[in-house]
Every structure is written in C-alpha cells, then in structure tokens.
Length: 452
Ligand code: MN
Image (cartoon, rainbow, N blue to C red; front, side):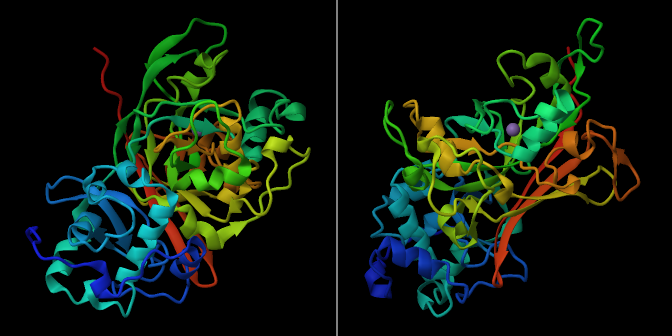
C-alpha cells in the first residue's frame, strides 16, 4: 500500500458535497443518531459516524498527519485534502499535512465544524465519492492497529483545575479537618494552578516512576528516593482555540466558542513528593513527570447530545461566573489497573457531570484578569470523583490514604500504583442508542531510572 501522488482534480462540487452549511444545521445533522457509515463500526464502538474525532496518526514510518476514526478504521485526512475533498471549508490544504492539529484549529471553530460536517458526508452510507474509489479507499483508510498515534495537539500552556467538590472534600477531610473540608475560596471560584506542558504525553507512552525528596517521618529530616505513593488522577481536559488578546476577558456565554474538544487525561501524581514540597506555592515536581492525554480529541459539537445540568451551585457565584442553560456533559468514566501479570481490574467508575465548576466557568475565570488563552492550550478538570467510594478518581481516595487497599483480579493488593502496572481510563457517552466515546488513555509505570 504505497502512497501515490494524486494528479487529477476532484472538485468537491463535482461529487455533490454541500457548500458550507450554517452552524445550526451542522451540529444537528452530523449528530443524527440515524446516520450510518459505509465503514464497519463494531458494536459498542466509541467511534460511530456521529463522533468524527480528530487525532494525529502515523503509518508505516511516514510523517504523522491529521486523521479521524470510524470504528477501528483510521481515515488519513492528508490524503483526502490532497484529493481536494476537503476544499471549500476555509482551511488551507497545508494544514492537513501538519504533525499536530494546531494548524487546523487556527482556522477557528466554524471551519472545524465545517470539516466535521464534510467528513460526515464523505463517510456516510449512500455517499459513493470516497466509498467507490478503490484506490483512494486503499490509500486513505488504515486499520487502527497499524497506526501510531501521536499527541494530537502541540500544547502551549497547561492549566489544571480542582473542580470536583467530592474530590476536594475528600482531600480536605483526609489532610485537614472533616468539619471544614473545603477551603473558604472553593465554592466561590474554580481553583486551579499552572502546570507544565512539556511532560504531557499521548496514551500508551510508558514513563518512569519519579525520584524525589520526601519526608515520610515528620520528625526526621527528608529523604531522597523513588516515590512510594505514585497515584493517578482521573481527569478530562479541554483544548482551546485562540482566545482573546492579553487584557480581554472571555465571558461564560462566549467560553464554549473557544473550546475545540476534550480528551481523557491521567494527571499522574506523586503524593509523597507532593505532601512535602507543595507549601506554599503548590504542586511542582509531584506533578510534572508525566501526564497522559488520550489520542482522539472529541469535539464539543459531538458531545452536544449529552449536555446535562451540573450540580446546583450554592452560594450563587459572582456575576462573571454565572451561566445559563446546561453546561455539564454526561460522560461515563472508568479506571482500571492492569498489573504486569494478570487481567485488568476496574477500580472506579465516575462521571464528568459530577464536576461542580463547568468548563465555561473555568475558562471565564481563567481569563477574567485579562490572561490570554491560545490555540492548543489544555485545561484539565482536576480529579473527577463522584459521591460514592467506588466513584473516586484517585487511589488516594479509593484506598483512603492506603488504609483500604483494593484487591486486583490476580489477588495482588494495591494502595497506590506499582511498577509494571498499566492504568487504563475509559470514557464514553450513551443516550438513545447512540454511543460516543474517547477510547482509552493508558500509561504503564516503569521502574525508576537509577540515580548516578
Ligand atoms: Mn490534577
């Protein structure tokens, strides 16, 4: 299956593709549960034609390029663009050859919406343009298990929020005072901190257990060594389009116009390093050794049918944080640990809708002081814990600081994450027979790199 240079012209109009529809038309028709693709979609797949996620895929040693996915088939957008099938959307062809999605996202939300619409048309049952072109089909369609996925976006700035009331309450109960578990600011603003973008890696990238300074005995000097309390944080992150220039604010009403889509996110945390280092400036080396993002960005448009109300907010937020309508999304999340030897065991099931502060509120708060947001910024939710112990989003909470170990299917116990463990987080929405998902974000812990 060699790539071949395409030298004949296929104008979109000659294939009956629509001109650019209005925004409202697009989100409705692309999300229609009745749509089917001519590409097979396995039962319970996260990637029916109503999803049309975006990612960066490489095949057979070729440079990574933008792609989408139907079922277990990856669609190479660089080939479709070369053929002219993605013309007329207001996106330069060169952007489809870039090794990250930022070049496409630079054309803005209406263009990305039009691109998703065009792909839906090309891939749906009854459209023969792509389906009946044997050469194009063979060239642009790749089996998922034969491609290498790359980080979808060149992440500029990474912000991590702390927006789950249940998580903040659990942590406050464990480490401070059960009667005053939430700090005084928590119900008034979405607490967050600036993280590090360089160590965010794509699902499947192994990483080494971090070394660091800890103080296991509060009455003795600190020690240096491998983190013994390596933890996960079940999170999701949203990826931004360009925001506004420095000095301007994005309102809650405008916020979703600046959000491209979401990924699953595992924000690995070394609890023992964190406990010792975080005062007074907050997380540092306990957080920046690795975070995993899922490979496929699911657009906010694809998630539209799963919009729902979030938790009631009391006290009422200040005016700049108030929102109208439903701002939460019903996304079921699960966490499994697969030990070096043995099957994976699910240790938690949560839901994105539990978050107290919505993405719109997070983005409005982030920019209320004039902070600018750029194409490719990643804003993570913070650990997403639900109300029940089996819905907690970190081992810290699941095992309640190690006092209630979990037993894996192979009989081993876990208080935190062991070398050789692979942590697998899944996320999907389901409603009226339609399932849209993210696949998984996975990461395997390797032993420490020996200190020399
Ligand atoms: Mn986090």
